[in-house]
Amino acid sequence: MAVSRRLKQFVGASQVDLVETLAERCAGIIRNEFGVPWVRLSLNKIGAVSDAEGVGVVIERGERA
Image 1 (cartoon, helix red, strand yellow):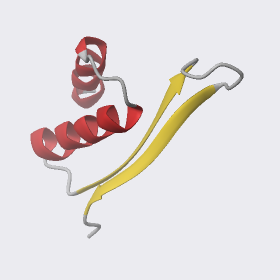
Image 2 (cartoon, helix red, strand yellow; image 1 turned 135 degrees about the horizontal axis):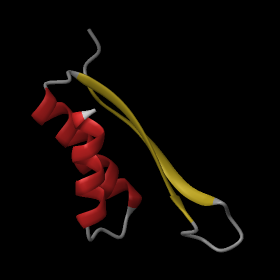
Image 3 (cartoon, helix red, strand yellow; image 1 turned 90 degrees about the vertical axis):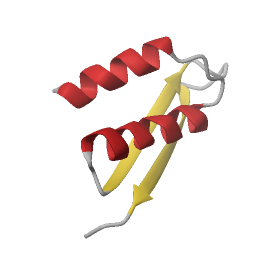
Image 4 (cartoon, helix red, strand yellow; image 1 turned 90 degrees about the horizontal axis):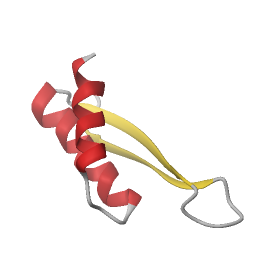
């Protein structure tokens, strides 16, 4: 799928510290480049905090039809 390839390239090249920032940017790519009116995105940064499996965020952007 074109979206997943584009996002994998973006995530791999990103130099962001906050998972929230990465989620915002990924949601923007999905909405703007692929014309998606609403997106719910869940990201998890595995190993970001010791003694935890990971930290993550779920965001929703846009308007549902």
